[in-house]
Length: 238
Ligand code: SAH
Image 1: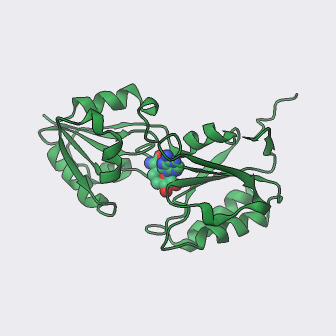
Image 2 (image 1 turned 180 degrees about the vertical axis):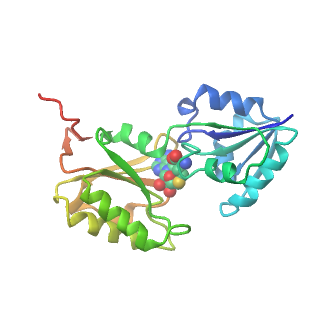
Image 3 (image 1 turned 60 degrees about the vertical axis):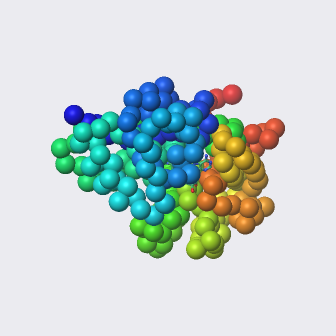
C-alpha cells in the first residue's frame, strides 16, 4: 500500500525544514516536484527516483504523484508551506482513495518577517498578485479591502515579467489609506542562498527591485521602524 506526503520544505535551507518533512522525504521511494525546488533537497534524495517537471504543469504533476502513490511512498514537494499557494489543495481536490498526508512548513511571510523584525505581530493577510488563476480586478479589490481593514499585507508572487506594473498599481491603492512613512519590507530569497533585504517606507518604495523570488510586506497603521527593525506593535502598554 502506498502513500503520498505533500511536503512543505520551508524556505530552502535545511535548518528551516521540520523533522517531519525530512523524515517523510527520507522514507519516500519517489520524489515529485518542480525542478528548482528539487535542487534544495538534493542531498536527501541521492538514491531515490526523482520526477521533476516545469513550473506550469501542476495538474499533471499532481496526477502523476497520486498515481504513483497507489503502491509506492511518494513525496510531492512545495517550498514554504504546501498549503499556502502550494500543492496541497490540488492534491486533495484530485484525490480518490489514495492515502495523503499534508506536512506543513515555514511559509515565506514567516521567513521574511523573522529577517525584517516583527512585522506580522497583528492581524495580517497574504495576497498573491499572480493573475494566472485570479482575475486582476479581484486581486485589486482584496488589496483595497485588506488595506481598509488595516491588515498587515504580505504580497506573494509580487512582480513578474508578464505583469510588471501590478505591484506599483497595488502599492498606489495602499497609499490611498496608509501614511507615507508606513514601513515596507522586501526580502528576496529569504533564509536561502542569495538573500537580499530592503527595508523602506511607502513614500520611498522602488517597485523595480522586486521579482518573483521576493516577498513584500506592508505594515499596518501602527507599524514603525526602530534601529533598522520593522515592528508592528501588538498593543502592550509600555
Ligand atoms: N508555498 C510557498 C509559496 C509559493 S508562491 C510558501 O508557503 O512560502 C511563490 C511565491 O512565494 C514567490 O513568488 C515569493 O513571493 C514567495 N516566496 C517563496 N519562497 C520565498 C523565499 N525564500 N523568499 C522570498 N519569497 C519567497
